Length: 150
Length: 448
Image (cartoon, rainbow over all chains, first blue to last red; front, top):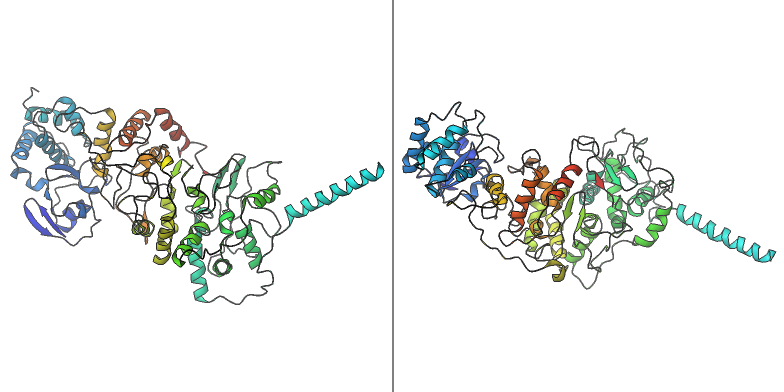
């Protein structure tokens, strides 16, 4: 099956029902995207498909053939992604960091669709779990990016 | 006067005696004169195993972690619990001493070797239609292939006088058809094979046909419009298998039905609830020809537009909250956060791996039980050829309140053209209590 990840074409051998996460991590060796719960509950495995956030642990491979997949490895090639990473650094968001690649993907997808999210919009879109409790820092960084006073 | 009394007494004795004989007599079996049977060939054993799969004996006659066919599964009745029995060839606890005729009487007529009547939780009203050949092969499989298990049967929780079983003989006389499946010469061989599997060993109607107040299935073949028209039981709604466009199989092709029974999934749906067990233990093991025959037969059962309502048409949903700055309902926000990643913001799922909610019978039927139940408790693992699938509905019992589940299901049932009834907090709460595995009285299989 042919995939396009971070602008590169890949030919992968996994079956069509394989979760995209396993292909990215195990078959292609890109381990920036993390496995958390495997049930679409935590968001650690978030990647973008055609600019929309998906949870790769519940995304069957055959549903993303011939679509544009973006993982954390290429987030800085994206204009908005680059700003998100800068804000993450400025606000010193990560603690242990395990969930953060998913958080950055979620924030980037949100700002791509809505460059001025309200507090409610942020709460509704940033639903990834963080065991360290970096939620306040995440909210501050996204508000900063949307031009709101923190 | 004396003479009249004597005649009356005589009548009472004759009628009473006749009744006594009737409720205790053992029905005839074509195998009574079978005598000593030869050791079965491997072909016979393989056919017998196939029949055991078709009839899904293991579903009730085993516990999840117990030995196969050793019994023990609890079933609730309005009068108390009953327990499925040990049907391994163990001589003390199981059916090791059953002759072929004894076995036949138990399976097809619901009568033990002692002449006691079985409760119709055993689907003998369906099995009565099984052919002599299938019964003989099934017996060979149980006696020679199944491992004996020394597991004692549990006594039923039904107390005297309701535990007397002889009245069931009268129930049988009224509600149980007599004789094996009769071929319909006006239909082709595939149709007849499908009808045989659905009505006899498959006993699809045990879940999918509604029952009367007297607990019998309202119809046992295509002659009745209630046959396989959908029924509520065990906290799940078993949908119509007729050609109802919304709530049945009206939008499914024969190939779709074949794929569903063979692989547990197709473009419309994935097995869940009790059907996941039926798939894991039974339908995936049936031959392709048999599954195609079932699809062919089911496609011949007409739907009922007056019951089914306006045909569903997909309608795009308004964007969810958080996208493009729109403010949604509480239900749509929960959907976006908890459901949309798998079932899609468009409600179309990732078929055939993750089922669509748009247009699914569970989203269109008035009873929301299946959707409430699967949201609270998640779905069973779908296991194909020993390998569990990669996608599974998680349990939201701990994560979402009754209010949140009611809101999100109301959103699902009123979006993308769905027009199922709204879900109330009370409905969710009732099933939450009823299906709580930590409660002292969790839901158990109901013999209704």
